Length: 115
Image 1 (cartoon, one colour):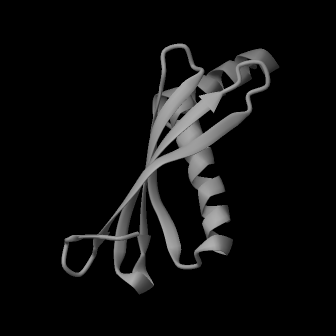
Image 2 (cartoon, rainbow, N blue to C red):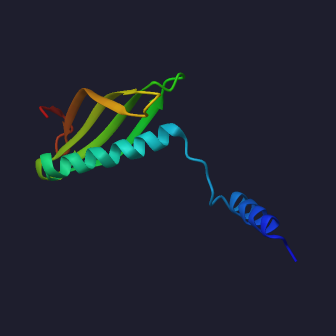
């Protein structure tokens, strides 16, 4: 019969081997959190705007990051990209986000349009 500790270790090992327990990188966690908070903001500010994908790259010192957020506004036929800069307070974990730029493209013509 397996001890409780051996059972936990066996289950953890099985999860690792099955791929069900994958480590999430800090950049991925930041991107997910940022995407969720942006979507919550735009649900009120710009109904119809949907954040499609967010990706982030953390600086080696983990005190700043650069992120790219792709979005759509279907009713206005827009595809857009936000370039974002984050500063991270290492003592509190508070993240300050600044939108560096926003660009838009018409989903109908493929040409650049005003956002």
